Image 1: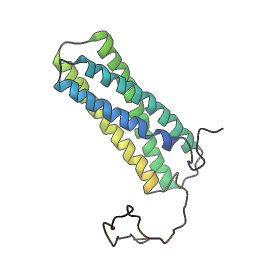
Image 2: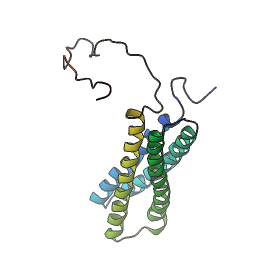
Image 3: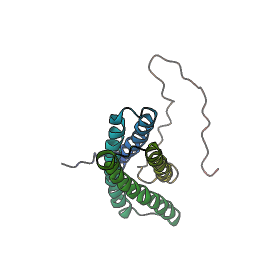
Length: 179
């Protein structure tokens, strides 16, 4: 029995959203801990989120590496895959290192100076910027280049609407091929 559903091209698209959510959640909880310094449990929760996010980033990284190595690509797609890989590599190992730092910060060192927590938060924001660039490059691979997406014939059907509701818009501008 395979872990990968029949409709999924590989494990990567099933894993990739976990680190994004966990790491953005970690930064959000980290901000809350800065705003409420009397609650050290928030800092420790952020640390756990950073650790879980780093672990899932490694899982997404290695599953993406495996998927990319088995995918034939054009020269243009090769450049796009390389850009995504480069950002994923930087981001993954940044958060693995940062999560290790946060373990020490939360459970060993426990600095009393507020500047240390603010500095760690700013460093985490840099990591989130890298995460967003990685996600942008990955999104381009799917939506601009069509990698990892099966070709589905057009149904020529109508727009979907919620049952018992009128459509929000009656016309949609559909880009033409080649423009």
